[in-house]
Image (tube, rainbow, N blue to C red; front, side, top):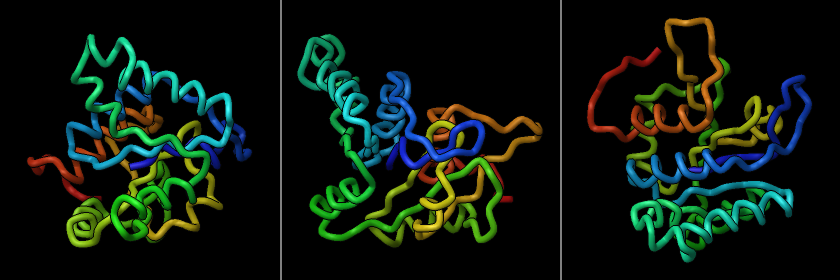
Length: 186
């Protein structure tokens, strides 16, 4: 799984690099560990933001946090911080022996998106896969165009559609690898 901080969209539609948030690292690492994700790639090109992310991770993997909360340590052990998608893909290739298929997520309906059923079948039959979530206002279209697949968005009964990325990650992971069928594909 990957959390992409660049290229993502700003609120007025411009391509930006977004900032690291402590909560995203904590909650997505915990969801990743819970659902058996093999690695959590945090992709951020900004040197200062990578340092912040590294300091947070070190606190929980080798610092005082690792001793006070061993469960948090095991989830933070999944995190790999990369400056760009190429570095993340290369890391996965080194770990698995092949480059992953890329599956982007979006809060928007995009032509050609695959259903959760299709995505579940894909991740069960082809490995490795990299499920990519965007920060800020979502993954920039130029990046989305490079991905192998785009997953249909989470849809609710409400017209409001702006979940936090950490909430979206948990919902998507449960739909893709959870043990209970509690939803239907749209």
